[in-house]
Length: 124
Image (cartoon, rainbow, N blue to C red; front, side, top):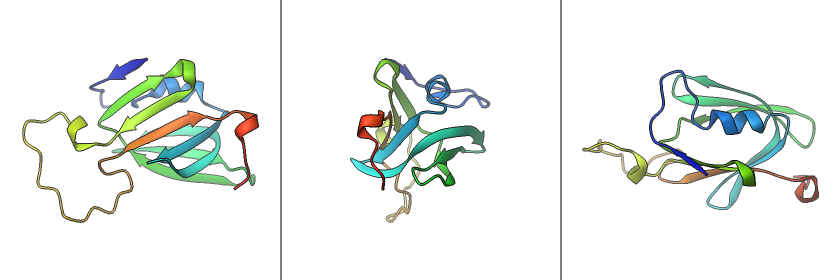
């Protein structure tokens, strides 16, 4: 297990784990709800986001973005990484005022990214 607290401007949080996941089938979930599934083709940092290209189980290339997380926990031996977007993971003395309604599915949650085996691969 490795936990990272701060990252440089050009570093992608969890980059080593994501590199090991290239060409593998991944399951992205928030609160035990699947948000994406597919084979990881590419990833890159773009401003405050990580852009991800997946090949879905239907053979379609799908691109999406996830925000840079406040914290990362990597369990490479289990093929698992957690991107932490919880406010308590944001390490600042004074939190900015948060709007009452936030449209992001990641806000104050943890994104779980896990390698899935062929046995657990199910068409959506």
